[in-house]
Amino acid sequence: MTPGSNIPLPAARVTVDVAAPVRLDVSGLLLTADGKVRSDADFIFYNQPSGPGVTYRSGGGTAPDAITVDTAAVPPGIEKIVVTASPDAAGQTFQGVEPTATLRNADDNSVLASFTPPQLGTETALVIVEIYLRNGAWKARAVGQGYADGLAGIATDFGVTVEEPAPAPAAPPRPAAQP
Image 1: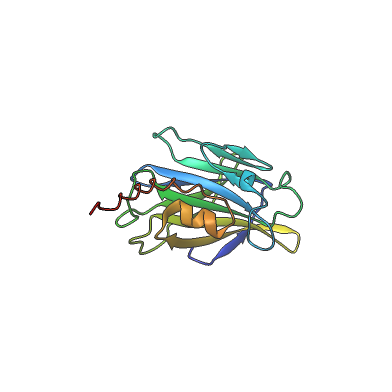
Image 2: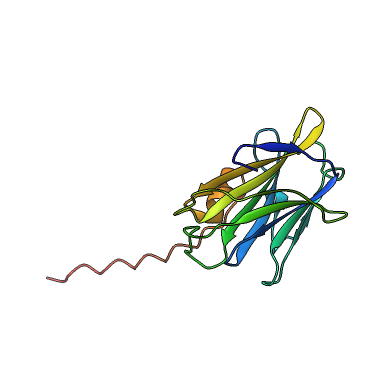
């Protein structure tokens, strides 16, 4: 696939695995027509590995992490599932890293398509593929849009609440100098 291209899904259950020469964190977000999650429960990743119609599978460091979408189990109102990836190492970018998303029939593991986003650089997170509903039929689109502010930037754009670290307490005021 090339950026922006799409294919109809011939299977109700599909898996998107994302492989790279470095360890990646892969996640999926279930989106409504307005492009937002309904709640943080629609963010599927290693700490929350399942949601309605969508599951996360860890590759354990030896195989790619994957998101499986069962289109028949996706709840009404969800029109898109975006699959994201970010390097596991803090601060690492996609410069020189070529992730490849492979879309498979989840029932027989046959390859339906693959996509490697071209020319990545300072991005620290990526929307790589989306599974979407159009005129009653499910399709897959190659995206390849990068984010410089990591997975938190993607999550925030799609309406997930991201916990910010607590600010350091302010220093107490200095006492006034005595004359």
